[in-house]
Structures are given as structure tokens and as C-alpha cells.
Length: 235
Image 1 (cartoon, helix red, strand yellow):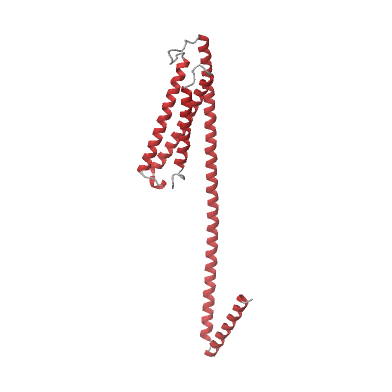
Image 2 (cartoon, one colour; image 1 turned 30 degrees about the horizontal axis):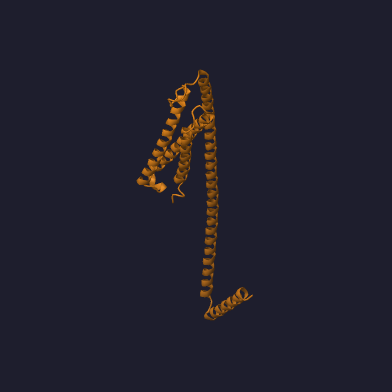
């Protein structure tokens, strides 16, 4: 199986694309002022994306564990399994690093601590507003994460159902082919028995008949063969 057909590499590419997008968003987040709505929105988006990617990497790691139990069955070897483990470990570390940085930035705002020493001290009212915004964003993040997980589970369930349907179709086709083979075998046995019977009858008749009778029978059979040949091939 080529990498383009291997489900691992298909999922790996999708996860890597998601990581690249999160990194781009993270760079944008770092350049955004902390006391703006855009910063709050990007923080929520980054945390949700990191949570989703981490879940996908964990599921991919579980699939590797299954393949590791019987590598030959999946056409793998220890080197390939080690390579896949290394990639999931690297991807997980990248996501965890991004998530820690984002959570650290969120805590700085939540407790009114700015990382920029030149920024004026926020008023208590402003801090309270920021706290309310982050509490709301946290709730929205959890709801979005639950919704995304539900969608992923629905997609997984649909895939399992499709695979099950294909399996049932293949099973029905195999059962039908098996019936046809059994019927064909029975017909061949019946034809073989009839042919043996005819051959025995002909042998008995030839044995009982005189030399003249045998010659006449041979001539009759030759004439019959010619007639049949003319009827089949020349008409």
C-alpha cells in the first residue's frame, strides 16, 4: 500500500494541515493587543483547535497501538511503526506547546497582569469586563468543542456504517457465487453420470451386435454426425 492510499498518512496530512493553520493563528494572536475583542476571539479559537487536534492525535496513536500488536497483518514493520510513533509524539508536543502559551496569555489577562511593562494598569471595571468576557468565552469554547466532537463522532459512525454496508454487500455476493458454484457442480455431476450411462449402453450394444451391425451402426452415426454438422454450422 502506497503512502497515498495508507489511511495513516491521509489522516496525518489532515492533522498536519490543522497544525500549520493553528501556528499561523498563533502568530497572529501574538501580534494582537491583549485588551481587544479580537484577542479574546483568537484565544478561544486557538484553545478549541488545540483541543481538537490533540484528540485526533490521540486517536491516531491508538490506531498505531492496534497495528503494533500484529504489524505483519497491516503490512508494517518496526521501523515504520517507530516512524509513526515519532510523528505523533512531535505533533502532540507542538500542540501542547501552543496550548500552554495561549493559556499563559489568557491567565495574564484573567488576573489583570500584563506582560507588557509599558501598558497602563487596567481599572477594576475593565478587569471585571475582561473576566466576564473570558468566562463567557470559556463557556463558548466548551460548547464548540462538544459540538465539534459530536460532528466527528457522527462522521466516524457514518464511515463505520458505510464499511459495514460494503461488508454485507460482499458477503451477499460471495453467498450468491457459492450457490452458483454448487448448482454448477451438481449439473456437471448429473451430466457426467448421464454420459457414463450412454457410454455403457453404447458399449453393450456394440458388444451384442454383429460385425455387420457394427459397421451399419458406425455408418449411421457418421451420417447422423454429418447431418448435425450441416444443421449447426451451415444453416
